[in-house]
Structure formats: C-alpha cells, structure tokens
Length: 279
Image (cartoon, rainbow, N blue to C red; front, side, top):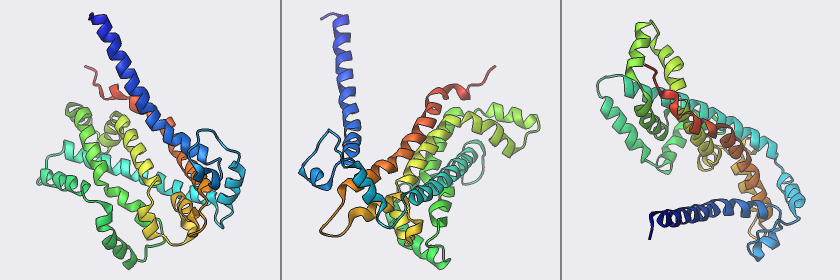
C-alpha cells in the first residue's frame, strides 16, 4: 500500500469520526428544537426529526403560567453577567499574584485552591445556606453573585493559562518605567491574557446561566426566579406535564448562550499570538 493511499484512508477515517461526533453534538440540540414545535402527545409517541405545528400553542402555555419569561431572562442575565465579570477579573488577579510574586506559603495557598476545586457544591450548600440566612441574604442575588470573587476552578484555569503567557522581563521593564502593580496588571497582563480571559468568561457565563441548584435553594420568590427555575415550574402536576412548553423554554434559555459564544469565541482562536514579545 502506497503512502498516498494510506494518507487518503487516514483522512477518510478522521473525517468519518469527526462527522459522527458532529452528529452526536448537533442531534440532541435539533431534537430539542423540533420538540419545541410539537405537542405533548406527539412527543410521547416518539422521536421525530421533522418540526411540528404546535409552536404557538407551546409559547402561549409557556407565557401563560403566571410568570414572565422576559423577567426570567433579565434575572438570569443580571446574575450571569455579574458572575462572569467578577470571576474573570478576580480569578485573573489571583492567578497573576500566584504566578508573578514570591511570598510565604504561596505553594500551600495554591494547593488549597486546587483542593477546593474537587469539593462539590452539594457538600457545602447546607452551611452556605445557613450562613446566608443568618445575614438575611436569602431571596437576593448576593449569594449567587458574590462567591464568584473566589472561584477555585476559574483560578486554576487562569493560573494554568498565565504560565504560558506571562513574561517577567516585560513586567520588570514596566516597573522600571514607573508603572504601578495594578497598572501593570490592567494595562499589560490583561491585554496579553485576553484570549484566556474570554475563554474563562464563556465558561463562567454558561455555568452561571445553567445553574439551577443554588438559585433553587436560595430563592423562593417567583419574581426573582431565573430562567431555568421558571422552566422547571412547567413540569405541572402528576397527571399533566407540558413537554412541548418545557422544550420551548429550554430552547429559549440556550439562545443567550449561543449568542455569547458566537460573539466571543473568535478571541479564543485569533488571540493566540497576543502574548508575543517583540525583541
């Protein structure tokens, strides 16, 4: 078998695997969009890849349950945008301090952060709820937003990224020129780390937008419900569940995620060389 033949066979194999993976990723999303246009009875009959004609009825059911879907979108947007900004800024700052400065117990502090990454939210939620209830912060967005200042998984990601882009000679040159430490971080390191910051921001936004567990524990007033919480209320009673409206609500909830990814994903690809230093 010649080298050219082997190359063609390998390409066919790679493209086949990639096509299968693409179908596996896109098919569930397409089924969800199709089910958003079907009735509950049609959904219970089985899977279909052809859209139905029940979209308007599902939308009326979705918006006729005594809550505002627009209000849920606004609540989720406020929380997710705030969480994203705080997560990116403070995680980058913490990772920058760990990477650049030398101080006592630095390795211990970073090891403790890595340890916290492995602790699931469910383990600490009881203590966290009691702590927030003691300060009368339940039914507010503070318990959902403020923990983003100290996000262990985001700090771990930022630290790993900064290891590949930090140039200490550039930092020393900025200090010689009289730039302060905060100025170095804002004017030099953040522009250099922009691809990692946007990647981290996408992860933080998606994680906060899809978060159901913590808001469900902390919030009981319907006017403060996030969009995933509103969709959950469509489950109805034991005898009737509006699956079509649920799928439509899920479809509506992923639209902002897709928009955010489309807008900011380009920074992940075209910003790889931003950390280069010209001699």
